[in-house]
Length: 117
Image (tube, rainbow, N blue to C red; front, top):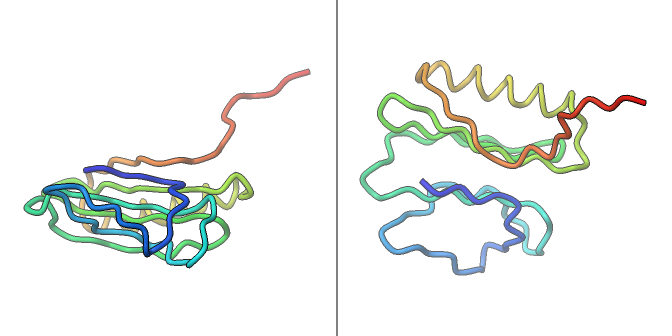
């Protein structure tokens, strides 16, 4: 599996990789922006694809392979932590209906450091 996030790509961009298939490319605008997600898998690996449309500056999808769900997330830096947390919890809840073993990858754009004075 190859998961690319914040790709700045347009649907017309040619991004094929030999022996891999693009199974998810939800960003479909015709202009380049700092968004976008592309997920590649080897042809024989794909079991099930659960696509989600992103809202509030977030894009995510879950793909089932054998006993695993791989969740790929792109979160814009403009999104609040509460929005990201809500969407991550939602996609995890939905994905757990298909399998219990989850792998979460992506670009969260979250500063997890605790800031002190």
